[in-house]
Image (tube, rainbow, N blue to C red):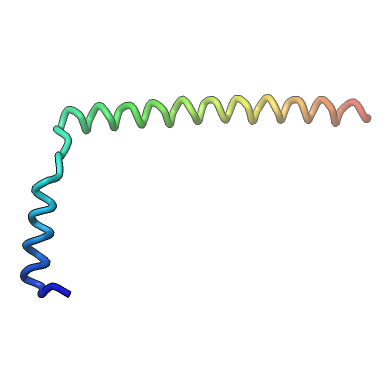
Amino acid sequence: MANPFEFIQQVRAEANKVTWPSRRETLITTGLVILMVLAASIFFVSVDQAIRLAVSFIMSLGH
């Protein structure tokens, strides 16, 4: 087990090795994530409505 001072030095050394994304890359990635979430939500709402209509139609045939 390393002492706390040595541990902090190792953490800083590892953090310096990280390649952080630029602001532009972060904004582009965020925009793409939001776009994909919107596309997926529209798709699932559409499928849900189609299934609801199909089930309603099938249930109405019994009356």
